[in-house]
Length: 273
Image 1 (tube, rainbow, N blue to C red):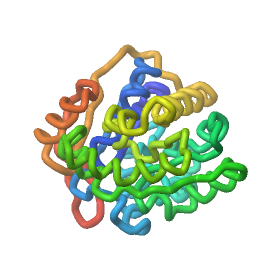
Image 2 (cartoon, one colour):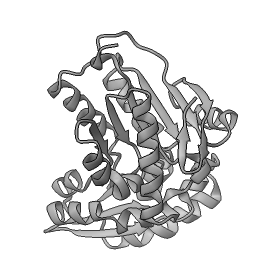
Image 3 (cartoon, rainbow, N blue to C red):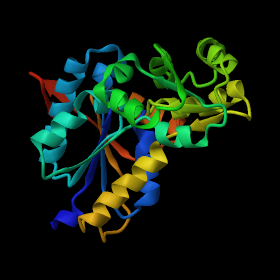
């Protein structure tokens, strides 16, 4: 198999990264896609960056063992914890991570008040600090951790009274401060976008970074002459949780059709059979 025909590997702590996979599949329909959801360890956002870094390194090793030409870290927390380290460890592999979309938010904001919702771990990483230093010099950034939201989304509670109450508790104080742009800095959160937009109203632009990530994936493949000429194929996914539950959740969320298999963790290493 030529290098260009090798697959793209994508991973997240659960089903959240399927938002990114869908955007990549739409932008690059000829590419073979492999996906891993680490449901056994979800949520990453409540774990230490050191722990998430170890998980991410093992996942990257497993995906590279499958011949991936490019790896997409479709998880903001894992990107914050491990993107720099895996790039250093594998300098000849193309990596794309999730970066909070502060640049477009800052460019579009009229009120100069931008909100970011993410996990606590994402805010603690050096990646977020770097993005803040580059793009937030003349705007006020409201940082809001959302503990419990990933679990609600993984449980299919996209528009329940409980999820709405949580989101209102976080978003209404941000709206009161004049926020007119809201960055979704977790790949799970776009699944709750209709509810978020209903709470925020028409004057707030909600930014999902998945399309921009797909464009970056395509740009890197083009620059390195690694675009696939093969035809469309069904993505292959693994989960460290229950495959039937993963498939059911993916279907509920409107993710692309895919084959789902069970993955196994053993002594800190990941097996993708």
